[in-house]
Image (tube, rainbow, N blue to C red; front, side, top):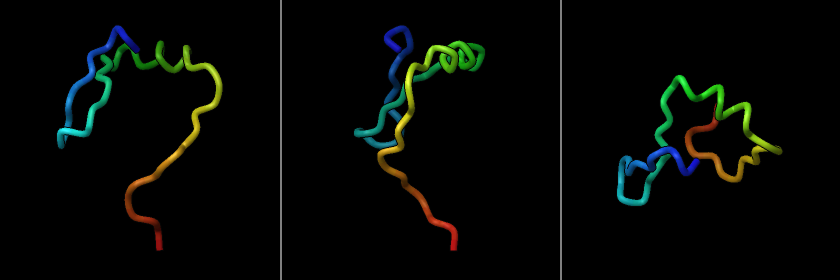
Amino acid sequence: MGQFPVQQVGGGLHTEWWLPAERLEELNVNIVGLIEVITEFGTRPA
């Protein structure tokens, strides 16, 4: 991930990596292990 810039988005506490869309498949192929959801934000269905 070090090759991709981190951008501030929204408020001062929010950052995200900016990846070119054409490199997304490459990123996905290189994910090792499971991705764990630790927190969810938003509304829940009724």
